[in-house]
Image (cartoon, rainbow, N blue to C red):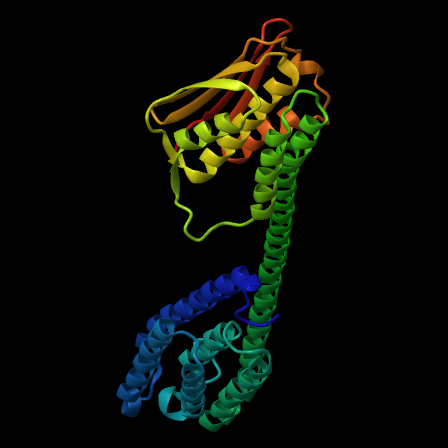
Length: 377
């Protein structure tokens, strides 16, 4: 996996926290080791040991602040190599092979921490170099301590291997989490695309039903003037041609009243509009209500058996409501075929797509009331 890709966010964060934790622990250990260095150093060089230990602890703190950058790691390794090879001046001979040797303690915690911020190639090389320098420094400082020194270096090697194993386990878990997150995000993206496609398809089918299909039905119905059919066909063609286009100058909000007056002027029935002087609302919702009202009036003309209807508009506390009422023959909404698009797609679903609600109340002989409601912003 390439570092920095958006798909490895968990891995990056987990490793960042792991590296910082390892370096903080190392700094804490080195801080505790500093007074020990003063106690274990030969009398002639005790000040040198104190300065070396304190400097190393301060340097580790700087590494926490700066992060595991290349120059920080390179400097860290160089300082540690010098420290290992200088044990003859930093530790009395009788403690060189002892497990309380502050230099060995420093080496052990450092190789453990380095497993978290070295790359795969440098990890083995640096670990072997540091532990080899520690062993060489032991031999130079006290040749008789070689057996004990080998044992201590072996323990440090085992600790480094365990730290490296923990690093691999943590990284594997983080990568697995990233794969799950990526898969989930991909599934959500695909679902969103599919939903958008379904929405566009539903809107297109509703538009086709409201325009061409409704006009063709009217043309096949006796009693519709030829002039009206020609004008309606021209309006349908303009609507279908502009379907999917969003003019750059389209306002965010629109006045619903003029668009409803236009719908009433184009309807095949006489409709009376009752409304406030202005009803301002988001343009997309206003357009949905306009089209749903047009479909409701088309249903009156095609099915109600009457030539008149009323359209009432109100806006109270931000809630916009439009009611289309006729006194026609009515019907039983539950018996409308599921594939019928006039009510389901052109009214109910259309309002749902813009966050509103469309309901149809009717009964045989009692007329029909279509209610379009948008709850506001």
